[in-house]
Amino acid sequence: MLDSSLRSNRLPAAPGVGYKPQHYDQILDHAHPVGWLEIHAENYMGDGGRPLAQLRHLSEKFPISVHGVGLSIGGEGPLDPDHLARLKHLVGWLNPASFSEHLAWSTHDSHFLNDLLPLPYTDETLERICAHIDQVQETVGRQMLLENPSSYLAFEESTWSEPDFLREIARRTGCGLLLDVNNVFVSATNLDFSPQSYIDAYPLDNVHEIHLGGHDEDEDDHGRRLLIDSHGREVVEPVWTLLDYVLDRSGPKPVLIEWDTDVPDWSVLRAEADRAQAALDRIPA
Amino acid sequence: MSVSQTTFRAALLDPSAAVPDGLWDAAERPAGRRFSVYRNNVAVSLTEAMHQAFPVIARLLGTQNMDGLAGLFLRKHPPSSPLMMYYGEEFPEFLAGMEQLSHLGYLADVACLELALRQSYHSADSQAAPHDALAVPPEEIVLAKLEFAPSMKFLRSDWPLYSIWRFNSEEGAPKPAPGSEDVLITRPEFDPAPHLLPKGGADWIAHVQAGLTIGEAFEQTSTVFPEFDLGATLALLLQGGAITSVTIERLAT
Image 1 (tube, helix red, strand yellow):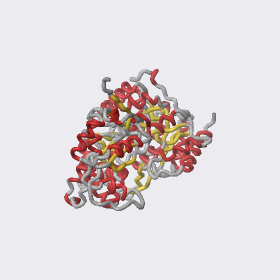
Image 2 (tube, rainbow over the protein chains, first blue to last red):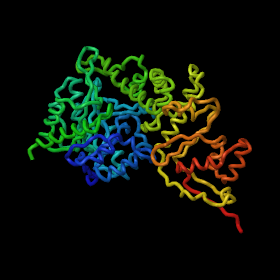
Image 3 (cartoon, helix red, strand yellow):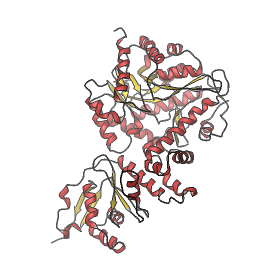
Image 4 (cartoon, rainbow over the protein chains, first blue to last red):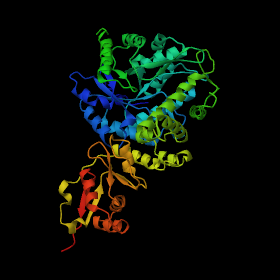
């Protein structure tokens, strides 16, 4: 369980964007830039060069959120101590406003699969994930946020609902939560549940950051809609509506626009961030 | 039915394998195509990473062939760490072992060069030695020992490696002529660039790196490459900011 003095989340309740190096100049030149930036931790684990120089410079002007995609917290095996040490180093020198990771696995037997893979929600996986999060928070020396995944299938062996599972992890470890509203919408469509009831069951008090992103559409073997979390286009209308539903219940939160593939011009990303600002503005003070 | 990550991973990397039991949709029917989303994510993201990492190999082979090779490579050598910036270290050896590609013997060296460029890009920053650090009498230059920037890399090749790289990276670059070429990579600020080294240049740098003085390394190199051009090699290193320290142990007078 995390010492409460280490709960140091400092992201503003404003829109942020996932940082892409091609937007570096525009972000710095823009008269009204976004409230904060998020980086993928693994892209800044080299020894030097342009990525770290840019990050150092940006961190002087913007609150930074470090978002890991490679720790494999849901892995069956132990966490990779080398990777944990790299995270500790990055978070140590950057002192970011927030640090988050995923409820997923990506490494098995020292093979990294470069995707966020799903896991069953059972008492056994709960124990293991809590032990991993304890280890991460102890090593890195601060609170981490855990993000809900996009699901394309379910595990026969699962005995917990996802909101209950996340609530229990947060209760046991003292970690915070990162609520990805697009992921809720994608999973709800793919696994046939109501996204609003998911939000109703979700521990919104533990949420310190919200993610929004675009998804693609496909079909399963039975002709059912299958949404795929691609981060390659605009956020769709029903996801903006679901964001309003969340914010009405949670109050203002930091809201991130994620766009990782087919990265658009800065103006397109900026327009998405403006829309997130509008969603925040409509919450009664 | 419980699905272990060993089972999940094996089915991910083998498109012909059955989807593991115990994975289903909301109506409790077998997951089928839903599992393929993960298969695709892994294969597509790693294939894309290979294209980004080895653009010249992709140009030499064509996009389709590169996709096919990447598909074989990623199954044989999935990344061993989440640092995708270093993915593909086994690619040169993998290319060298492909019998169908044995007529393109230079591919492995080109892949080594592309790997070295990426390593240089992510290397630690360093401060170049002052421009006049070697502006000393010739009898003192030969006594100097040098340290190089971590971003400095060099390669030896039996192929015209630099010319092949240039021909496939720069518009209007001349066609490669047969012959062997050593390549130097320097990174003056953030952008690594390859340069053609004089004959013997790679040997000389290796000797200096091993701790020999400029003069000792020159003697060793000249026995193999009598035409070795020390001045041109030093100029490339200095212009690229690749020399970080010069230590001259002067003779006692």
